[in-house]
Amino acid sequence: MKRFLTPILAVSALFAAETAPKPNPLVTHTELSYVQTQGNTDTTAFSLDFNGKKSWGAHSLKLHADALYGTENSQENKNRLFGELNYDWQFARHLALNYVAGYKDDKFSGFAYQFYTGPGAKVIVLDEKPYALEFQGNVLYSIDQGMNKYYDINGTEVPYPYPNGTAGLTKVDGTYNDYWGYMLKGAFSWIIVEGFKFIEEASYRSGFDNDQNYFVASKTALESKINSTFSMGISYKVDYTNLPPAGNERTDTTFMTSLIIDY
View (cartoon, rainbow, N blue to C red):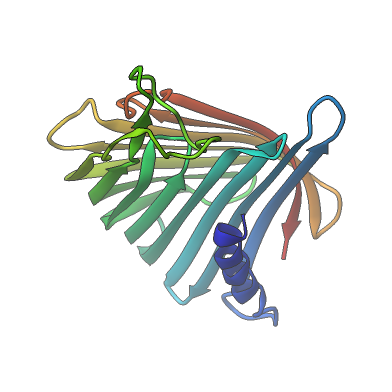
């Protein structure tokens, strides 16, 4: 857990370091959730959803980091890290040029890692309260590296986290796939009443050479303000892979309640 939380917390601290009022202020949004149960089953789950934005003139840099880690009876059952960095040059009120780089490491997805990067553009349709709506499109170079798979003598897969180790198992190397493709994204928010917000975000990523190789991610959330710094939120996330590695499910969903810190 420390392996992937340490860099995220370090970046969060770096974003939080600049707090003095400025014409183009630093804005951060952090969602934290922690669950622990004991009794018939011992479970722990921790999630972090961080967004930071720093602007200077017409330029801005945004970082989104999403981490999820959990165990059940001391056995790891969740281990996901996602990070995406966006640079925007907003040369007109409703238009911006963009460059994006993203990385995902999910031990239970069948992929050792996924990476994508490339230029694009953004259209800011609405940017005045109570609504905000924007769309983004990018041309991407992507890499999908499959995890190594392990099988017992009967040919049955022994999935991660390999509770009894991998000794004596047959190893099949993960498939490496790099390709050119694209990503389409949309983000909408609505302040329903003062202090109560609805958020919807979605992305679609695919390759030019195989339109069946695509990934869909979405987040639907409600946030309720406690004060100027703290909020409570509920969110539902969907992560869909149309062509997952053999033995892995297409859809992952996460429902969580969070303490939200805005500073």
